[in-house]
Image (cartoon, rainbow, N blue to C red):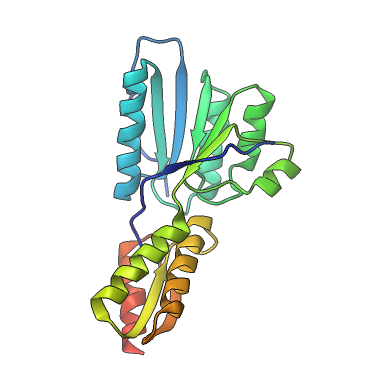
Length: 217
């Protein structure tokens, strides 16, 4: 699915061009935070940005929410994080485009004593620990449950027949988990045949093209 679900708390883990800059959401505090999201091209991330800004305002801290233009900008996202590490921030929150593209930035923040909190897309903790880094916490969607819920809805609507899965971005842990949940639900349902599963890269236009091609097969 192209849309993303609200996040829930999980246990802490241990050791194109750039999007327009956003103005800090709150002031009047010595605490300054930086949040780096994937992109604001998806309504999910717009909602998350608004939630971060509202929480910062309520806490009386300054926050700067940044994002990429698309989820293809793995290198530029790392560049933004490195720049934030070299900035004057007391804490950094990141939603990495992939599980590994921000590891260098996390390690750099660790070395400067800046706490890093991981949201949504999980950083590969095995790779992160191997690099000598860690995050102070992690909050994300139960994406397997999200995929299952979507599949259950489809099963309820059609009763029986052929179905296909349009995944998120290939290699993204969140997309793979949703595909897993949907696959398990479809395969467990009587009268349902899963005929295909292909990535749509969180892009609605691409997802439409992929779905059209599957239907025409």
